[in-house]
Image (cartoon, rainbow, N blue to C red; front, side, top):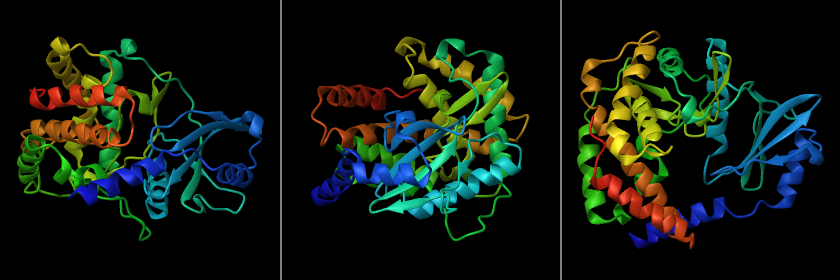
Length: 323
C-alpha cells in the first residue's frame, strides 16, 4: 500500500519538476515560436505558455507522459475537431512543422492550440442568462457525444481510471470507506448512449472564454468517459467550493446555480430523471476526488499551504454539500 502511494506521488512529483530547457527549445522549433513572444502561464499539471506568431495568438502545452499519454492527447485532438464540426466552439489544436498535432520529446508530449477569442469571466459577473448559456453549451457537448465514435484506437480513460481515484487504499479509513460507499452506488448505474459518454470533466468558469454571448470551451485536459450527470455535478461543486462562496451560502448558491444551469442544459439535451436521483452521489465523488488530489500533493510539497488545504477538504468531506 505504501509502495503504491509512493509510486503515485513520485509520478506527480516528476510532473512538476522544472522543465528541461532542451525540451522547451525543441517545442519552440516545432512551432516556429520566437522566444521573446513566449509567456509562462504557470499551468497546474502541465507547462503552459502563450505565444504569438504571424499576428495570431496561440497556446503551447508541454505535458509529461505520466500525466497524459500521447494516445490520450491524440484522442483529445480527434474529439475537439469532432466538436468543432458539430458547432461547439472550442480552441482547436494546430499542426507542428512536421504536420503532427502531437509531438514527443523524451518523456513529454508537445501540443499547441489556437488561442480562443473572448475574456475570462469573474464570479461577480455571473448572471442567470450567462449560467443558462453555460448549461446550454454543456448540453450541446453531451448531445454531440452521444453519436461520437473515435476513428482511431486512441481513446480517453474512463472515470474510475483517474490516478487520484486509484489511490484510496492509502487514504484515511473514513475517506476510504466513504469512497467505497459512493463507488458501490455508481458502478450499478446504467451506461447508455443517453447517460454515458465523453465529457469535459472540468467545465468551471475559468475553462471557457466569453466573446459577447458566445462561449468557447477550453482546456480538455481532464476529458474522460463518464455519466453526463457527473459533468454537471463537477461544475456545480467547483463553482460552489473553489471560487470563494462563503460556507454559509453554499447550499443556496448551489441550488440557484443548478436551477439556471439545468434550464439552459435542457435546451440542447434531455436529462434522465433517474440519473438526477444520484446527483448527490456525484457531488460526493467530486468532493472525494478533490480531497485525494490535495492529499497526494501534500506528500511531497512541504509548503504549509497544501497542509491547510488538506484540513479544509477534510472538513468539506465530513460536511457534505446537500442538494
